[in-house]
Length: 77
Image (cartoon, rainbow, N blue to C red; front, side):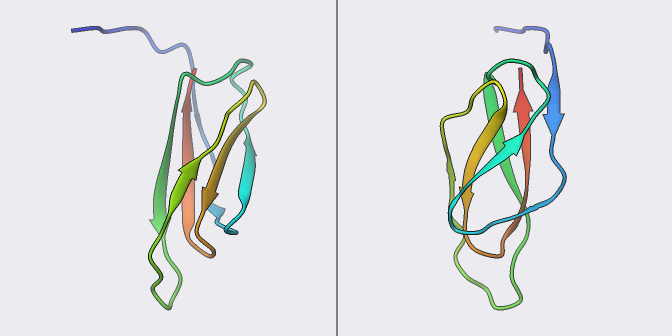
């Protein structure tokens, strides 16, 4: 089993999907090693959610989430 110490973890405020890639600023100071996008709510009229993670950098985690779906980003450094 490979266990390692987490250097830092960032949890975003609740975001709302636009259907286009969004940049969520994190405070890790380096490119995250892992990013999780967790859905936290959907629109009143159900639509199938789609989540696509982008290429993260030292400033932003990037995600594309279906229009009007609520989500949070968890980034681990």
